[in-house]
Figure 1 (cartoon, rainbow, N blue to C red):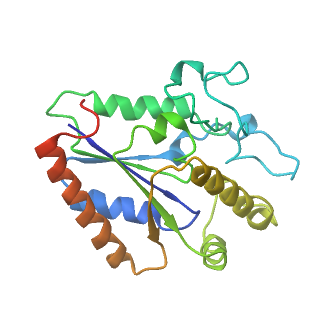
Figure 2: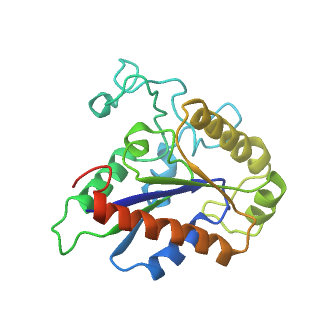
Length: 217
């Protein structure tokens, strides 16, 4: 059986760093990075704010309704889904399922899914055994992002005009749906954060072996 763990949260919160640290600590561990599923830039919608909508979707769209193309993935009509236009979410879900359905000797014991938009999309929300959400204050997130190089680079005003407002919007939607997440303080020293999460995952793996995971694969 595979334990599936999500590491989501604010931009530049330390998601990738934590995921890579866990990868080195746990045997038979694999990582799926959400960033690898971005569509080509020319396919990304330009919003009213003038920026590419890398973390936007059809707000209020319910999986299984005529307005939403993801009908086949509906499993719980009471939980709205945010269909993300800039990401190939179907390909991402298929990749997770591929790892979960591989032969026993090749199947990872721990599968980590890392990304900034994991918990407003129904097929991902339902696949995780644990959902971590890293949070840092606005000032720290902006400072960290200013030190990073992106391709394409952030246009002037992108963080304040798009990145932070969309983070708040998606977080609010996650909280309104009452998605069960474990909040993490991304301002903690990296080693402290790793120690906390790795201890939790070890306990989950023990329970997964003794009682079976929430989903049997």
